Amino acid sequence: MILVSLLFAFLAGALHVFIFTMESFTWTRPATWKRFGIASQADAETTRSLAYNQGFYNLFLAIGAFIGVGLVALGGAGTVQNVAGWTLIFSCCGSMLLAAAVLALTGRKYLRAAATQGTTPLLAVVFGLLAVLQ
Image (cartoon, rainbow, N blue to C red; front, side, top):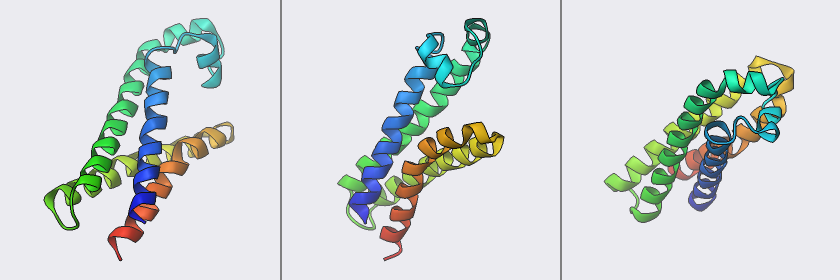
């Protein structure tokens, strides 16, 4: 269960790095802003600074998940590294999952994006809980 949780936490982090790249660096490209449901190039330019900021939120969650994976992988059961790693995984992946829930509640047109954003952190948390509670 530990390896499965770590794999999903890593994948959740990788997805959030990809989202960071789109929001912070390619936001004004038509392929990106259309993916996010932005209506026009002008709207993409107007929302650019907001997307840039949001991208960094995603990056920081990803970094926390990656550090958590590394700490769990390198620390033995019950060590400070292990506890810190699980804390980061549950905190960062839990935040990703809650953000996906908020996105899903925003409207039906966001359900697919919410499922994409929320599936890997959900699996990381579920398998992590199973691993920790054994």
